[in-house]
Image (cartoon, rainbow, N blue to C red; front, side):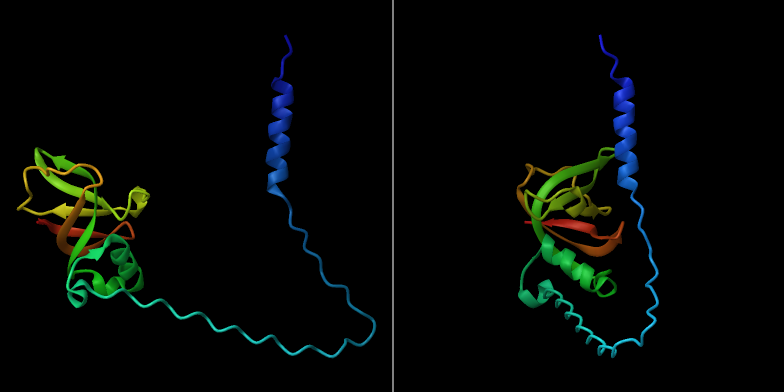
Length: 160
């Protein structure tokens, strides 16, 4: 039977070393002749304007989506934190602590992952449980806060 360990070691070592790469920095050679006329500096391209924050739910007369909440939070975190909002999304999961519902997580779509979820924490008036199946549409009302650099809601209530 052939022992492939030395070959495997050599292959892994070669791949690891080839991935490191070395940037070669070279100094431009000084020309003995006079430099050519300098080209005019390139005009700086204007920076694109920041996207406008989505309208607040009070302005649209309804609940904002998870995507709109994330976009608003990204655009104006300081202006959104502490505001009460109504948010519509898909139920993902619920967490209970000591037999009391602590929070639910919501997604904007079935394709979202956990890092895109919004956690809705319940306060003292937390329901005993929620009768929701995964990906059922749910609307909640709560106060916006920052949680790990993302929007979250606290003192939530499920809106019927």
